[in-house]
Length: 197
Length: 197
DNA sequence: AGCTACCAAGCAAGCGCTTGGTTTGGCAAG
DNA sequence: CTTGCCAAACCAAGCGCTTGCTTGGTAGCT
Image (cartoon, rainbow over all chains, first blue to last red; front, top):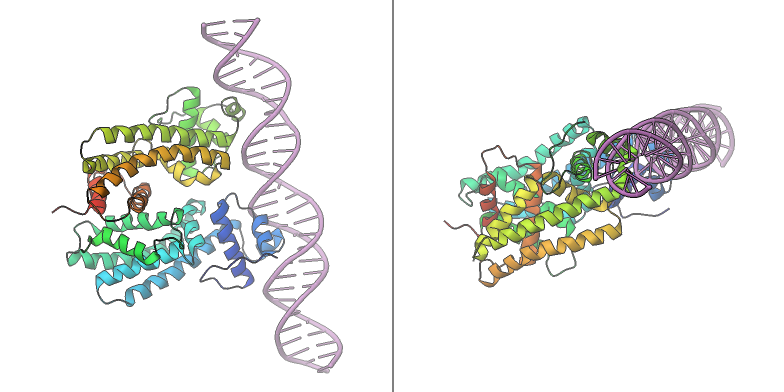
């Protein structure tokens, strides 16, 4: 009965424990290379018992994604609300998404980016609708900054560059190095609004 | 006998045609969801005949990656050689990697990023050794720029942010839109050295 | 003759998922 | 406090299908 550290925002009901274990396995081995027998073994049950909680293996993947989007959308909302100026809102957004990406929901976030195409078209549409809410938070803040002349580039394009910078961090950033998460956040903010000497 | 547009840098020997078809399928469906029967059908042969050209399915994946790294390392070398100042070398590097990522080797590059963990550890090590050569070209130019004070950040960190920005472009950039590839390259260069008004 | 490229057929293993039945914990009636 | 009951959670076994890969043989070119 191995206990995996649970992922932030997921409770530890039987279902929640399955989700945490699945997220970690999906991230480590990929969705296709992870068998239902793997997931079952990780929480100490038989493989068939999984289908008492989820209809299909893909439903587990979708559930992981839905949980992590919902949790982090709320995190972003609070990040925006906690600052007064658009610049500080941006800094909070970058910190929040970095925390989601390399911090407490790291596994689930990575899974969401990398295993997107393993979802059926229906589930992709549903997940996309949730992501739209998430993205609107970013675009509002970037739009405000653009209007007050903080940068010249198109906010939509800039958001995509930010997504790339942050989305790649799991492949190299490690928390216990010289560079702190906040320093990295400042570095990324500088890429958007230019450095202030 | 469907003919797939071949990927730049791969000849059209039987082996080369298999590689091009495999790269496109790997990108579209992922390595695991692509069967040897899919690849065989794409070039119009029987599934068993593939193993006359490659020992295992994984060897096909590795071959795709090796070809695309070798081809694009050479491209980067020429990009550096074609400019005199570090700033123009950087601009050429960004253009070259963008071309590789969303242009003529798009499928193979995407595969390399997304299906990395499908390689065995041995093949991962070999591919990593090839990537190191590629990365050194970037770090040399970024190091020169840093020494002449073009930016303050750590060149290693900056390279990773660039990798992220460019690596994410296949998910949104499309060639026939308003934003040209060169404009996007300039936009990314500005994120590194700051905008020049 | 010998080499490259291929076909036709199929094997062994692993996969997602089903099935029918058993354990467990909580809770209200007697 | 016991009893009867129910739903949630789980087990043991295995079915049907797909997978990567093998085998033995053949066509065509040099």
